[in-house]
Length: 369
Ligand code: IPM
Ligand code: MG
Image (cartoon, rainbow, N blue to C red; front, top):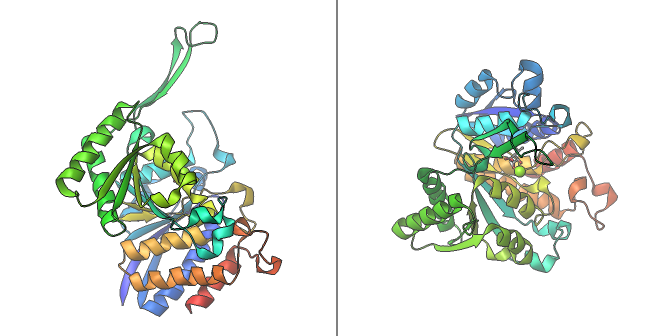
């Protein structure tokens, strides 16, 4: 029997609750599909700050490097919110591990579950044919460019005196654009053969380089894939106007962050959006949602984005496609039977079918078993 080592990073807020469901479901999948999952657990985010003083302890990096895959739940919360640049923040842990594992490609599939059509904020007719994959560049751009603060800058204060200036820089190197473009084109070849490359080339220099490099890669190696340039403001509008036009969307880090939250509402809830962060070594899987501190500890969080991230892990890191298919259909089946966590419940949901986190996990397990 094959053994896979999974490094769990439960993190903060609802993270531990949804991680518990993932572990339960994985045990059943292992039994049914003949795999042995071995877990290690490490600290990341706010809990790591509390226990070690830093959001990304060395031990966590070692555990991640030593695993076959990393499964991360969520990090952050008001407890660690600060605008003081000298204080640690949970997000540094997340960004740090993405960078350390060189996870440059973040795949966020936006798929509509038939049973959830009415949970979307869009009218059902707009969801016809929606099946998109957002390929977000994850280790460059505004998130990682030079940043800082300067005091005593002449004219910076209101009224013209010396004051504070702060800056972030959107930077891209050719190789960073080239490799993410390849990821997008390769993905498109296994799907419907279309890539929208989203940028702001009418204003930003980094976007102009983005566009040049994407086209160069396309013309040289992927001329069979349809390539469409789209300006990011237009994309934000098109996602709600005609989302079915998209197959693969590739874009820089921050644009992808924003557009993927927007696109998640097509599925009915941010609680349904999974993601895979891939580099050339160990990959990391995490739901796209945050740690939802407002509902942490109440047992009401939706574990499905976590389970769907696990689905991506089974496919991309372990090649367990049959197991992943079974998991997807278990999720589909449970939703089709009317079971909902509160975030995806609507007027038509029977109150007795509105369930909490662990009941949802149990329902998936019943279906799998
Ligand atoms: C995401 C999140 C993170 C990001 C935050 C928590 C740093 O919003 O994964 O989309 O901005 O990348
Ligand atoms: Mg985000």
